[in-house]
Length: 351
Image (tube, rainbow, N blue to C red; front, side, top):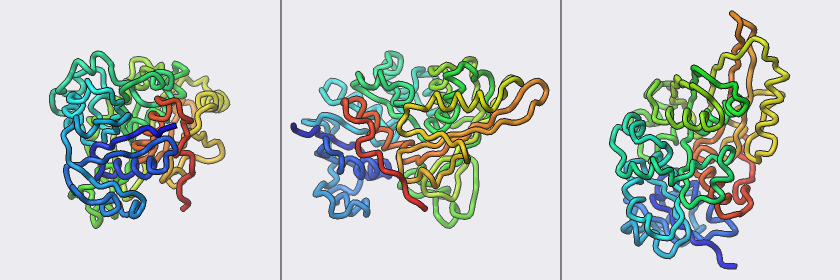
């Protein structure tokens, strides 16, 4: 049987590198084309050094319609704003789309304007919901019949997975307070003052506190899972890591809740999920999932105070894999009816 042909649109960034690393070994896929706005003519191994000698592919600069001509699926690995403009040019082609940007995750154009700072170029696509939100742990059935998938953000995936058991049990409501730290690769391949190694390696700093663009995405996802009247106060933190996200979320629950009941919720929520591990004898750690498509989740339960008990929900994942390219491929596998774990099942690095 012939392999499916894939194009990667915007392949010189870290997300593009991770998609290539996985798809070059995918038994059902041939990477037919990789496009970019820079490094034109260079081989993929000249830009992504870990891929040297693995393929004859070179980066091309092509109009959108030429970039997807003759391929079955296009992985969009470009920045938000740019992606939406390109997508509108190829919607009448037969290609399936898996988009890694934030351009098609939200349903409300006003929220897009508020958090991304510009009007959406195709607001009707948001209102119509043409893109299925690509979190397999929540939307697997819809992804399986989708033509277009909007792959979740890295913070959004980590925080939503950490809180999902409470949302599905209809126990997540009101204010949630979250602090999540992230590695420098989440800022992209182009260095800046905030990601320059001499500063990043010895520093912790927050950015966009209480207004990060993943905030409405997280609320939208958790409400779809069963949360109600949810508000999220989210503070992101840049950490001296290359890869990884560690999220800590604080929730108030009724005083009657027990650790045994919460353990049962976590186990039930994730018992059939191949890429989510519940930590029962320890708490999640980034090093345990770095380089892999796995996420770890867990919780700690505080004492009764003023008629309530606080539960602290923890989650950890690799921002470039489960928080990015790996999850996009996971959704692609579901969309095409392949084994969901294909080219994603191997563990991460240790240490």
